[in-house]
Length: 277
Image (cartoon, rainbow, N blue to C red; front, side):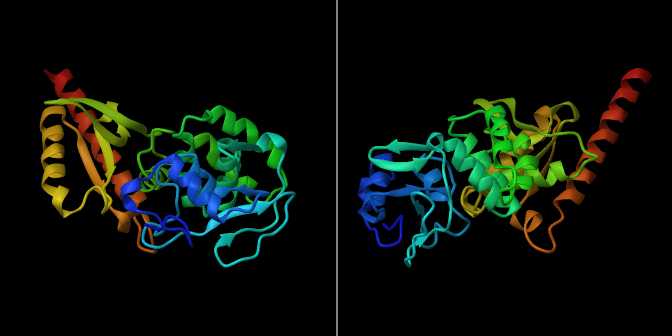
């Protein structure tokens, strides 16, 4: 297995913090600071690596203090400075703190990936959304700070995947729609069930099906689960895939608007029926 360019280990060792630290030690100079997605990966953020990095070997993000540039074929780097409070030591490696890592990813990545990465970092539990928002003003004048300022209040640690975060961002971009709830909990036949996001009051939900967790082998189970929820809880559930949220022909906003409109009509009809009775 090769988690980083130039580093290989036996898959039997598993993906643990100790293994990650050992891998980074093999490629990081003594005075390096581990940053960005590599720092998030080391902090245990779920699915923090870039899209497609599971199919290839990702580069390492690191900088030499103070703000010097690393130049080699396997490290992503550039000019950057840090406060002492931005840095922490993880078993001998100097790494940007989860909060600084989230701010850097929120500033420097493409908007969709920035939002997904901040959600993933928040899910580690190392900082609160309020702390993230409070950190933003110190980056005034830095590249990407406007994006960071806009997105940081919307971060939510309950997001289950990067694509789920991006679907929520598409929803939030529709200013006429109510703000979605995450991980709506319902009573199931064998315990609680959760819907990715939606409006419980309107009995409407949107779920993202990725190829990793919702492939053909899982399709029948997913269909049965949603049919049960529709029947027993009366939810209208729209299912989204990559084509709905990525690319030139994405139309998540249109489907979401139509879904909420259906739910509102149905809710209005139910109220009318109750009053008429």
